[in-house]
Length: 148
Image 1 (cartoon, one colour):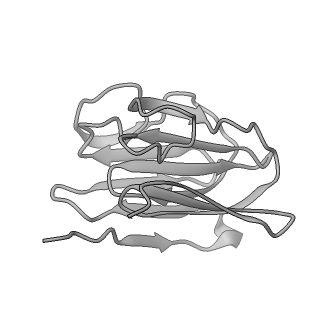
Image 2 (cartoon, one colour):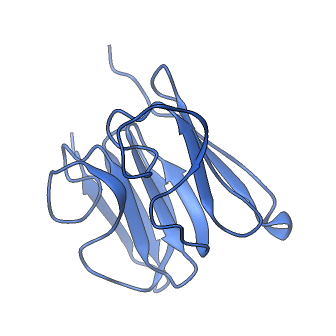
């Protein structure tokens, strides 16, 4: 049976927070940004999905490995996470079997890794089970990862 990824985003831009739930597997993981635009996550982490530099499952919120305070959006895939920084750069971490992290490899990453183009004009992101889709501010739509 094919499993589908479900992405749940909650938040109010004026309050400065957003939440993404990796809910296509059990146990699931939760990732959120607080009012200072730092990312925190907990839950299942076998593929580095939480971005804390480890594969240790977490029962309490743990900040992502870079400690950055300029995240503007986050999207949850099957076992990977994609996030935008306020400077327009795109970062990803977790399972990378099909190149869904966009870094030109198929190696899993346990900490945020910038996508391979180094572009600074990403404006929106979405993540599926094994793929990532992103929009640039010039209106072009990009996708990478599993294409079945």
